[in-house]
Amino acid sequence: MAGKEEKPQNKTLTNSVVKAFRILDILAEQGEIGVTELARTLNMHKATVYRFLLTMKEMGYLKKDLKTDKYSLTLKLFELGSSALGRLSILEEARPVMKKISENTAETIHLAVLEGGEVVYIEKFDSPQTLRMYSRIGRRAPAYCTGLGKALLAWAPPSVVERVCRNLRGFTKNTITDPAALKRALAEIRKNGYSTDNEEHEDGIRCVAAPIKDLSGEVVAALSISGPSMRFDKERVEKLKDIVIEAASEISGRLGYHG
Image 1 (cartoon, rainbow, N blue to C red):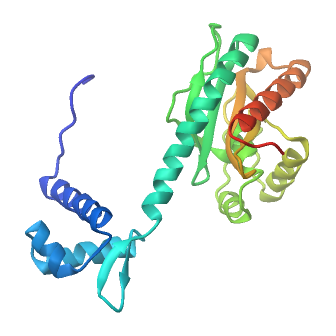
Image 2 (image 1 turned 30 degrees about the vertical axis):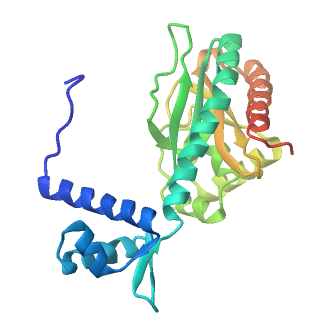
């Protein structure tokens, strides 16, 4: 029900999560701490605290000093925070550019990032036209058959591409399902600086996309212009690809990239 606050279903699990975050808070404040001292601070049994610490260490959030037997935080939380801040920065810099090309093209504009072989839509500007592409922020889609996804995969590490290639399946008659063909397509995208989706994920939908780079030159997101195939003939796609490349370049510049 809209507006109704969700309540935890498992009190034991919720308490465990709260305790884990309390441990992180204490470590962030004190720098390092031993099991006995932490158990006393939390008013918990040492065996229980040890299990928490061992699990968090195995997950990469903590490290143990073998000389002192004390635990401290790793940089994993910093990495997570940096990732979140990076996305906020991308959104802040991308929105005015997206708004501008949305008004100029009257088509749907998407911003997405790559996660686990899928694209995640993190921002959009809807087309004002009645016939348009349906989408929502937070939606996921396979990377290999979307314009955004291919723009991201083209600059992704080879290990990511190989993992994606092991799970190709058809959505439409135009979906690329052959690993070798996908790799050739990604090489062409790197060469041209943009990608297209020719009804590869959804019948009747086409798009053109380009990568966005950060200060270091790493591709961190992609921008696309999407719409019904009837409005995306070859001549218009040629015009839109120049627009999306220029827009993606402008956002990259705003993020500090000057390659």
